[in-house]
Image (cartoon, rainbow, N blue to C red; front, side, top):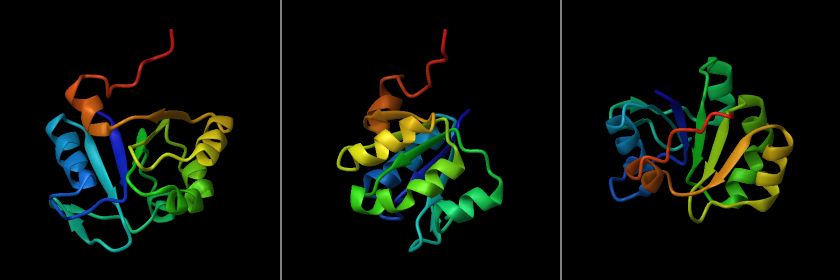
Length: 129
């Protein structure tokens, strides 16, 4: 079971971030929603931002991003200090500058759809051989 932070979590069932939280739970992962404007998503308490998440001491395996690059790039230092093993940029959230910085700091980066990765059994991180 991975602990997966969802940046841009939404309580709107039509949003992909909502569907990702739902599916992560369905597949046995612990979803940690992150959004300053939400209080609860699918019964989970929402963390307002990545700084608060880092301060909570919660270990994050994967950060999946559902915000555009103008927003995510502002969180560069918080993402690095959170030190997830992997960051997934979902479609529309890609950021070459942030990706380059994360890789430079030893964080695995994937440009993919979390929902597709889960449904096709590709979500689990591949362990180095």
